[in-house]
Length: 310
Length: 310
Image 1: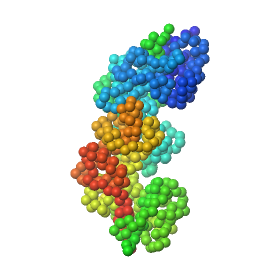
Image 2: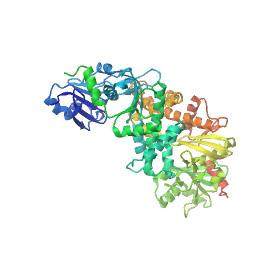
Image 3: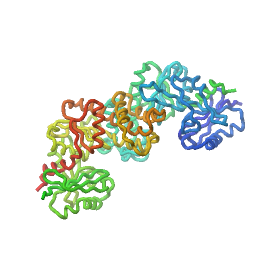
Image 4: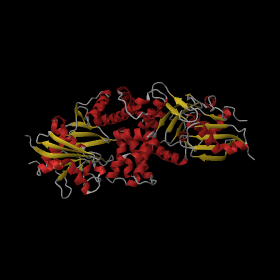
């Protein structure tokens, strides 16, 4: 029988997932609940949510260490854990774990990127996924790691540490424009997958992005109004346009920081990574590595670095 | 006593304004109602709305001609008036007025810009403001006319005709991001005017716009979270960032079409034009002319070109 070594918790704004992990990082069991950090208020609510997803495991093995990452450590979460500044590697993060009072839970700090010239940038949760990707794939110690999502992160990793990163709020732009702008009005409620319309949006950003996103977005409407694109294809065109603008800027950022010869990795949910990989191919720069959620592996690596494991 | 010559109607998606005009284009009286074209459904609703703002004038002078511009002529308005293709001057527009059946109302067509290479672009209402600006300022016959708004229009005018244009959905982006995205969460409900924060956003777009709008938008949050900008200033920073991205692309578009030596004019509501002029100055390219609403002058010029005036 395999022995559990850690309860790892991926606790974002809107979701909560707990993993029972063995010492190799294998997920033995998994529990999820709709108890995102932004939906909970006050210490008892967090205690109850943690008990809901991890209580049974804890009662069976009271000595198991507990480690969480994500927005649970933000000012609107359970405990405001101060950001660690770049460069931040696993040891830097492990040295700054924090615990809500009267709990056994440790929380991973987020990372702050602030060179004093450009506006600062922040991450919470992605640092753990990056640590997990590095634990599984040592060749990413000097690389560009992209984590697509509501707030995509482009990360420059050097000598195993996060040295800088840039957030693109691509996923959120897609959601709010689709739900709340004039662009959504022509779109049917269900999205029909349409790689051709998606890549047409990607190509518009790639080839004519200097016309500006505020202008190119309006084409989602005018292509529909003039019937040059079926209404059912407009959501995919919008997705391609937004991801295309992210890649246009992200790939230029990657080149500006001398990373063109380093590995490029995508980390995240498989369907979204597939979409990004398709778009990266359209830019002629496909990712070398595509990884599914690496948060469990990152939690284990950080727990080990912090000597929480028995 | 001055003799009325025309009832002009500026009938947009969300607002309806009627003007009693004399033969010089002076506004003798003005009525407004919250009866935008997108809020009305069916012929009788439009008839009633028109009567609400212009009925008294019509009963006093039944022979007065009536001319409307704007979304009233769209597929979701009173009558779907086909777009006139660029190049479109006053005579082209006047030749294609259309009338809903059993009414005395004429409606100005919108304009379609479609070179077959880039996605098409459309306007409805702005063409009339442009005709008005040209009627009042003949030196704009070869110029770049910018109409800021929910959907800003950058227009290339040559020999008195609209030859091409580009829409930027800047105003709508501001509204949806403020109301529906994570960026709005830190902002207090009321916006405090703050030229310094606004220009900081403009400068970010001007100097670092190649980092991409999806990335730069996230700074609205990270500047707030890290307390590098007071929460009360974040809305103005967002406004500056979005207008800055519009200007960055719009001024490059203007240069690409050889218009750097031609006059640059702003046409629209005074507070918004003032904001754009401030930003244009920050780009070192202030507008030569700033005009308030020129729709009444445009309606009169088009009525004259169509020989509707007695």
